[in-house]
Image (cartoon, rainbow, N blue to C red; front, side, top):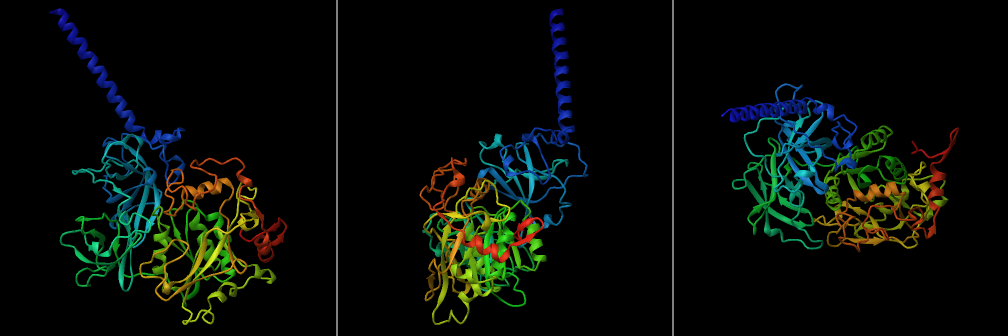
Length: 565
């Protein structure tokens, strides 16, 4: 009997010790969450506005509980919707109502998942119409095999966990979603991922209906008039049925044969368009950008001098100082506008959007990238650039209504690294002068009113309305210098975030024969041997010499170009 008592007493003492130890460990874990976030171990760091893509696979796993100390008073649940993007990235979209309540840009946020794991939430920009703050975080590694994935809670780093009495909704998937909308005078255009999946194969518009409102059963439904690529055009609902002014109304697509509605983060809004200015611009340029701040000034300065009047940038989620460079350009008198377009691999859809959004502000639009420069050998005799160099091509006198010219196609010369190992300080036109012999690809200057109602495009050109035609320019008359294969650090960054939908991931063996792929590169993001000397078949100094003559100047620091930092 004494042995049993002693054994029971020892078990009791042991249990007390174990419980006490766990209790103190728990208190230590809660009290030091912010301290651990500043330790030198980068794989467990939460930093405000500094969590980069390079740390994307190092999501932290903190046990954030109701006992975590709060410096912000009572917790408040932030209303959000989250989408799982490629690369295990989660886009958290704050509701329009709660966006205005976010207190400070310096606040630190985390994504708290249903497993009680968290990862840093980095501010990603503001989706327009209506304005919605967005954050990016990474789905923690340990829960990637737990299906289905649930949407996280967005909360301040040191705030108590919000009280919830309901299970979190499922994460929306990027491969099946209505991600944006645009209302014009005639209809509503929806941008939808995952319905017309195959390139060149589009489903009949009669298979769909547009749904306005959260109530799918009782929501207002209208006919779909066009279904092409990721673009769906819907009839506008009667003003008495749905008001786009007085309330925020969700809009989506119903797939009639499948009896289901595509999840949506898009809203029905009043008609909107690019700001026109004092008068309609004859020629504008549109491009999609990601972290191009160091290149932008050279591109804008050059093309503005040869005839481009307005620049429209679709920002694909840049996290460099793009906004600052745009602000500087505007202060210097250049007409540069930015449209936040976070959606990955949607360049075709973005250009379709721009062809409607900019139609009232621009007559012609040039669709080229920031690493592409339009050039004509005939300009070498000109001592200075002139706006007529491009505008004479599309002047009303030359492009009469009888000719029905709706588009000009310009071939591209692809330049290689030209023995550069870092971004050349004097800019791409001065740093890269060695290219491939034959032209590859083309870019276009398009009359926006001539674009087909379906808005179909292949990035480099649009489908035109019946009766309009495209004229292909000879290379000796005009060419696009495409500085495609730059110094390896620049090229690697560019191809990691390539916005075209044709090659979804250059590290995967999908669509290996696409011209968007790099010859000899394979599927590994590793610098190939001899990269600085690749693609060098012809030494071409023509644009280098021309821009040097037009823009170069001597100073006490030596010869400089105006876009140098």
